[in-house]
Image (cartoon, rainbow, N blue to C red):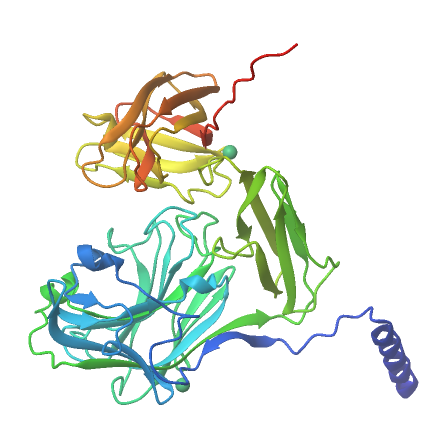
Length: 498
Ligand SMILES: [Ca+2]
Ligand SMILES: [Ca+2]
């Protein structure tokens, strides 16, 4: 009896498999989706890694003592199967030390998965190496709103101790509320250790070798606590000094050069063994081409191609792909995934003017000495809550970079409403000090949702300019939506006739 039933089940399975109706899937577990084993020699592969130098001017936010060099073998090289980042004591760029910081942002980052690296650490009180992650897109705004995942952080003045930490707008070191833990580990500088984060939709688990150091759980469905539903990229760097180091005695006594050695960086996705769906949508102005199925085998690769309609352009993806991916992209389906392609009219100069992508592409700034304000998404629009007005309107601002050209005419339009009649100033100005304005217009925003317009001809070329909205003299919440800026094409006067 038992045997016969078994036979029947086998026959049934065979039938389904033969007709292709059952999705075969590998055993549940981590599936390697990307790795750099650091084979070869020379600079780290430019197909994977980008050198970061732009923070040298401002000390990377922590008053750091090193100058990060760009593609310089003395600071970053691949040799004998590993990446070596070397911090050196040598003056460059106004700093006393050189080092390197590289990231994988150009790969588009990853959403969920296991990200690990086998690392041998440098030492000395002034050394500060890290293996960590930041968001590819500023979907929830700049640091710390977008989140930060510190898989491994070592402060040389704290021997034998590894830190694993997360930062969000609710929990970050600026407020002293960051979440994390630390672990004592022997032989950090003589042996390689495996540093890992396992990232799921509801938690982040941090490991050193097999020991779980820390778990951060999603207890609130709010980006202030959980911005970790966006793509993040990996960063490897070896800093020198920094504010905390100076408070703990400084760099003195650190022998140089110091080497951070990385055997590999690997990224895995979790295969739960189940087929998954892929929902693909597009905004107005384009369509997507791909092989549509009811379900996909776990890890099945799907090619997507976004095609704009005449008069429109492709902007970017959201959801299962980050905005870094081009109009042709591939995605491996490991969980039920939604992908959306965003298009805009060809003449549109702004990104994300409808705030469908949160605060992506917009920069917010508040002169916190003078004013207080919060920016967030409410009812699909940007809501600016002015808590304390400033002396000047520009002390609370929203900006987006746009190039301006001499002799061109631009029209900016936006929908706005306010709880109480409130002044908002619109400026086209320099995106660098002294932020001089090329044109501006003051508006009074009323209680009713209304479309406001501003048309101006610019008399200077400036590729480094921006659009700026100033709220600093307002009175309570103001909402903005559907912000658009277009370059007017010349109107050709048609004369004559019959
Ligand atoms: Ca290796
Ligand atoms: Ca909107």
